[in-house]
Length: 302
Image 1 (tube, rainbow, N blue to C red):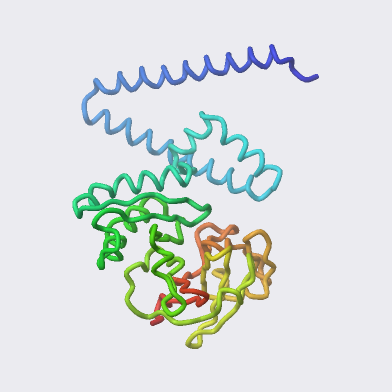
Image 2 (cartoon, rainbow, N blue to C red):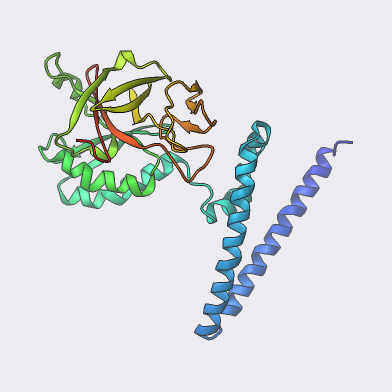
């Protein structure tokens, strides 16, 4: 029989009181340890770290198992809405703050650097899962060295706070007026190639790449896989990170490609492997100029 709303409320209140008591117990014990000798404190800290490492690994394995079952994965996402569960997993590094919050923190960290150069940076938009649009302001706007400014400042901050970001788009209020058929604007560029000066090769037209699908192309004898969502394009070696088999004939569904040989699955926006988190696809820098998709090969490419 289902519990009445009153019974549910009483249970919730009891749970909150129990949680408060646990937090108070931890605070009391920390106060006691703070009065011990340094050597004793170090021993307690080492024990705490060992226990937390054990708990983190157990939780990591549990989450991996739950994510393999759609119903369980849904329940897991709902559970993350409970502050206590979120806080514990955040403490263990198993979840992260929302992407926009981390992007804003990254830009806050870099603002003093930008201000020292007489400018600043504004967040225009965060487009999940992997795209950020920013605008340089003040002396940094339209500066010939703006790509260097981005590389040394904004890019570094975003790399540290948001490793999943794949595309940083620099926009400006006058950008449309600067573009022309003979000199089209760069729609976006892979974030960590913002100040790359050479090595870009035409590979395809944007319209040739199926929306949320894949296109295989060969560049300098290297088989590559292109994928796009809107005008955001990603590029990877056409090799499964498991045994190196080609992926282009694999099934694509909801932004995920499945290796047709051994079933390994990868996110097409980041190359992250959903089957084995310790591996991922080899990615390459991409930029779109007008309708032209250009790639800069990494790992031995030029």
